[in-house]
Length: 146
Ligand SMILES: NC(=O)c1ccc[n+]([C@@H]2O[C@H](COP(=O)([O-])OP(=O)(O)OC[C@H]3O[C@@H](n4cnc5c(N)ncnc54)[C@H](OP(=O)(O)O)[C@@H]3O)[C@@H](O)[C@H]2O)c1
Picture 1 (spheres, rainbow, N blue to C red):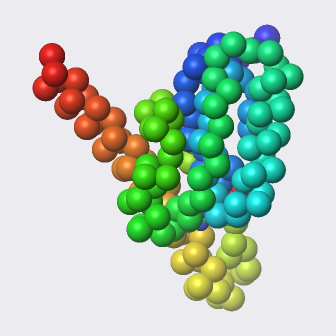
Picture 2 (cartoon, protein in one colour; picture 1 turned 60 degrees about the vertical axis):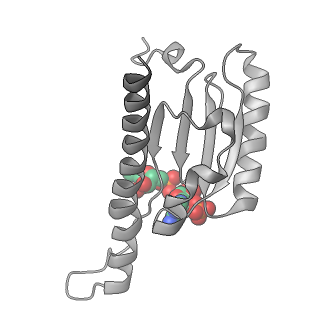
């Protein structure tokens, strides 16, 4: 039994941070964001191939956008680098992250802890804020128009 109905993803636009390591065949549009452009290009090509192979009708638009989620300036200008037809994001997958600082307490390297928090925690919060702000401005536009 499947616990997840993939048809809910049909035609949605999904933004995946830390995406230079794989997603693609569920019929969604996907914005793949991470720092390494060569790895992003390879994953984007794999997504295009997976979508073609799956033969689903929806989705199929993929865009690779370079992004360091620990860099506030890059986050602020993120949507300037997203293609026009993918700017309305339905789902954010805050995947960017890694594990450092696993030494015994007392030997922890503070720069490792700081770097992990700046990506895994502060980056996640900043990306979530960016997307929620976008949602709010869309709701406001709808309210003003109606
Ligand atoms: N693997 C596990 O067993 C496991 C278990 C529990 C939770 N998780 C969590 O699942 C997530 C993915 O883990 P993983 O094992 O797939 O890690 P991974 O193979 O090391 O991949 C990490 C991804 O994050 C990206 N990334 C790192 N720093 C970034 C930054 N500053 N800005 C944007 N992207 C960044 C990397 O791309 P670039 O280097 O190209 O930026 C890469 O695509 C992490 O949040 C991890 O904590 C993993």
